[in-house]
Image (tube, rainbow, N blue to C red):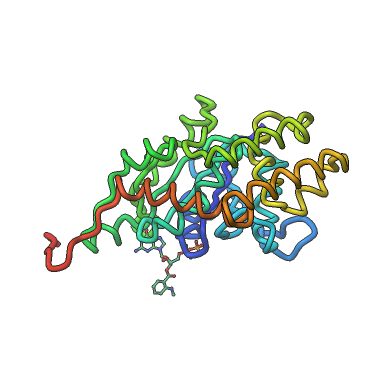
Amino acid sequence: MDLRIALAGNPNSGKTTLFNALTGLNQYVGNWPGVTVEKKEGRLKNHNDVKVVDLPGIYSLSPYTLEEVVSRDYLISERPDIILNIVDASNLERNLYLTTQLTELGLPVVIALNMMDVVKKNGDQIDSKALSKKLGVPVCEISALKEEGIKEAVDTVLKSVKDNKVTIPTHSYSNEIEEVLADITEKALANVPKEVQRWHAIKLFERDSKITEKLNIDSRALSQIENDICKVEKELDDDSESLITNERYLFINNVIDGSYKKKRKGETTSD
Ligand code: BGO
């Protein structure tokens, strides 16, 4: 069977540019089943047995837009071999929000750190090795526009698939939340494959109605879970979805702190 790479990233991160560089003219456009969201697929240049599936541009895997639902349904149900997450390096904080969610899906993830030409031109510095270590994901610096670093990114993707390196998220949530996630997993997710249990537990904690409906959880377990969630919300004084969002950003700030250096005012660059 063909190997499938899912290309995921924020709108305007350079996804189309990268998709074109990866596939050349070898691409076809249709719609995602049942919806009028464009679906682009192509074959990796020089690798006719590797499919690249371009997911819609998204900021999150929440259920609020068609694009988000299409993307997450594909990642959860179709299980591509790997996610190539394109990250706009000149907008690191916002882009890494999606990354924190992609790493929770139980799939291998590789980051293509795009717009590196812009970062360099601005005189900023990103330590992609430190970024990779902190995120637990291989990071390849690229410029999709200038077609730089693409081959290295492709090699990294193919190697990660070969090694079957499922990404283990390096972030966890506060103890109170982790306890509820463990409880949800035990009460409601016994029949869900292990590699997607954590993602589902987080979605149930966030009261994601689409996932709650899909899982068809018995009403007693559901009301126990609801009690647990309410207890944590009271303790931590916020709604469950905001708690998760805030903790994602705390983690991202920590990641950026050790790997991103913005040019100081007045400092000049060599080019
Ligand atoms: C315009 N470097 C630079 N500098 N720009 C890049 C890179 C890169 O590595 N990669 C992409 N871009 P999409 P989504 C544009 O279209 O691929 C640019 O939404 C313009 N257009 O060229 O479309 C890319 O698919 C007029 O820029 O992203 C594009 O993810 C003026 O980033 C934009 C300036 O790329 C988004 C830019 C008429």
